Image (cartoon, rainbow, N blue to C red; front, side, top):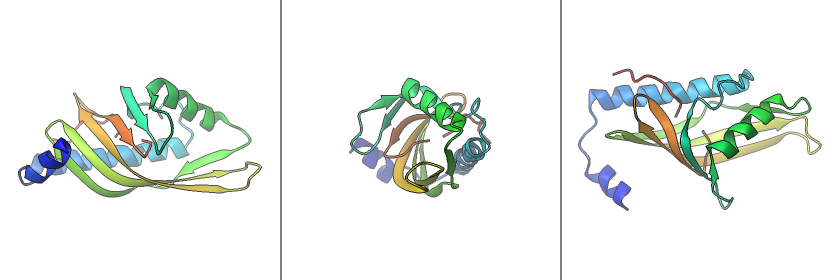
Length: 150
């Protein structure tokens, strides 16, 4: 509720907000490119080490759960994972926090069940320290470490 009030009572977007939104958007697009290129050494750069991953009824997970799983997926020789560019619905910047409403679409090929497509609407919550990092993920997966444009 506090987040809703902060968003609804916040000031009009500024040029800095636009630059922050652009940096977050670039980070998410870049992550998708790295993942699809199989860059296992870069797939965890997006996440803050304090990441909390809360996905639709699964047990809460952390950075140390998610990153090894992503790296294993990229190293799997039997199956192939790909992500479409995220469908970003909205990026709200509130000080050093940002909420990204988006949908991730992934496809797994080569498994015994054939091609499996997963569409995951969700919210990513990012916190800026020196860069934007993903801090909390609700119902989704992946804000990448990227220097702010502003």
